[in-house]
Every structure is written in structure tokens, then in C-alpha cells.
Length: 332
Image (cartoon, rainbow, N blue to C red; front, side, top):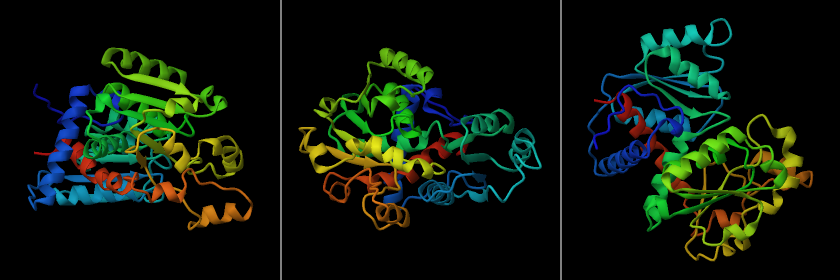
């Protein structure tokens, strides 16, 4: 089946069919292979893209900038202090202006509604680099990485997310897993499970019924058995630092340790993480909290540096999958 995503925005995987997601993954693998073979086709020659960042980033910004320039595009970066969007100029007006200048717009920030409104008014493809509700480019990179390291098709893979089941990574994974027929387990304390987005969960369950996926939400560690992937994320996002003591109290039982990996009863279980990660006390934040007697690590250093960990392959694949999204939507 022919797939044409030209002119499409990439806001959430909910907007895409399994066939379209498969196309993006195949394109990602192809672009990575070409890059490693030294083949540069400059599929975005003459294109201009703008990156709108309300939240700082390492991987997302670098992935978009490097991927775009490798394909021949020019990149403009605007952070929250570099434009009038939402301050002296409405979001609608800013979107319409940027759409006259640029061929594509990336947004990384807080509200999902902002990236959706940009897409509504810009008239050019808009790509979601992360919001509080979703992180679709990360899921593409994760699925690509799993395909490189796990000798199973995606619809036979079981992924466990132990931690804050209300966060954007857990939701993004639920959406992606449901689309691709995967077995996904959101594992966290009951108090957090009770606060999950019920409308999203209902949509994901309905999608899973159509694709044959299996979506579980539990606090029972028995669900770890048979896992192919353990997926980690930090316990407090940007702007939530005041909540760290409470989060640590709730989530310490779900820290990824060697013992937790052994509970999977799979000697080849993979450990993945969207990064950045608190796996030791070498960061300022982790060290500051350690001095207060609080251990904010969501994974032990032993696991993070072990043979099970594929986090840096995963980080590299952010660039290849983001490149695929841009090439598919605005490339030649």
C-alpha cells in the first residue's frame, strides 16, 4: 500500500495508522543505513524549518538541527525569550506568520493544545517535539531501537513502564503500543493509576481491541515476567522539582534495579530510557537531593551501564526517526 504523508503534521501517533507508522519506521532504518554508507541525498534542499522551544532539550534540538542540515535544510531556533509568541502576539498570528516564512515548524513545550493550534493555523507541517501530554518522536526512536536489538516483531514485544504512569512518556507509549499491536504494561502505585487520563486510556484500549494489542495498568510486579523491554523515565519533570520528595516516596519501589530486571525472567531483557536519567549522583540535582537524604534515581547505575542498556543507541535513533518525519512530510 502506497503511503504519502506530504503536508501532514506530526502531533501524536493517534493521528496515524499502523501502516503509516510502519512506513516511518522503515524510512528511519533506510535513512540511517544511507547515512552510515555516506549517501546524502539532500531531500530537503532549499527548505527552511523553525524550532520553537519553550522547554530546553539536548536530544530533541540536536536531532532536529543535525537531521535537517544533513538533508540540506536551513534551521532557525527560537526559545521562549526569542519570539513574541503568546506575549505581544497571539499564537494564531504567530503561526500564520511563521507559516509564511518556513516549510515546517517544530514545537517543544507544555500544552498539547499549543502544538495543535500551531498546526491549525500555520498552513505548513508542524511536528511535536514534546508536550506535557505526548512525545511521539521519542516513541518512533524507541520502536526503531527495539527492532535493532530484539529478535521479535513489534507485535510480539512486551514493554514495561515502571514509574509515574501519568506522565507523557507513559501515555505516548500506550498510544504507540496500541497502534502497533504490542503488549504494554504501565506499572506504578495505585494512587497514580487513579489519576491517569481516563479519556486517553479509553481511546487506547479501544485501539488495542482493533489491532490486537494488550494494554495493562497495574501495581503488581508479577507483570514483569516475560518482559522484553523495561522503560525508564525520571520521576519529576521540568518545573516539578518541589514534588520530588513526594514522588521519591511513591516511586522508590519501582526503581529499576538488577533485582527488578531478574524478575523479568528474561536474560536478554533490554533497558531503555528517553534521557536524561538520574542513574548516579554526578548531576547537580541528584547530588543536592542526596545531601538531603533523598535518592532521586529512577534506575541504578549498575543497570544503566549494564549490557541490558541500549539507551545511547536509542538516543542516536532520535535523529534518524526525526529525519524520517521531516523527509516524509516536507521532503522531495
